[in-house]
Length: 257
Image (cartoon, rainbow, N blue to C red):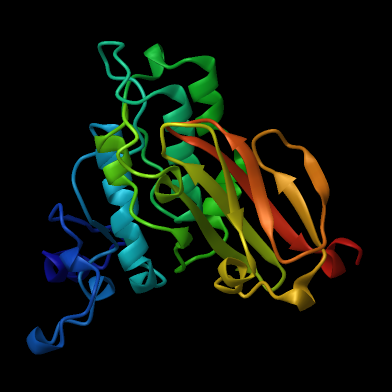
């Protein structure tokens, strides 16, 4: 199919789907050099028809983000909110959390569901130009998890404390310029949580002491937060089941220029 599409000489986006991450990495024994040699997008997990599956796809993206290249992206499936029958697939807060994370991941922003049944809150989610700019900022680069572990297990036990709260929080980020970064703090647990990214976490985005101080812009409230002068960034009192904060961090040397 790839060769047939290429033979037309026309620009066509070829989207693959195997409901698995196998398209993304290279496989030398088969002379397969990775997803970019096969198509432009490749689904890496199940359909997003539950919150647990949304988190499952996010967990998988943490393993395959590095295989993105100009013209190829791993695809963690559709943005979900409310179905055609008016029933919520995920909560409005979870829709916004997914959208924020998909923007950091440079994932395709394909809306699934009924626009007619969407709340104003959800429509505002999908039209946030500041978040969309993060999604579009880095051609060929997808964001990564820089703190925390897999989260799908937290959704599977959403009404109990089977897992410690710290096991259900994470931090995701993407470097979008020499002195500019997008960072998302995420709470998938059952209780309100504070989430932090320390010096080791920030280093994964090449944020060092030389980058300080950092100006912080909350991309949902549109507030400009106090200057960050230490190698530690935190989000406080994030609600359970999808609470999050999406920040744009800029080195003060750029801000003051």
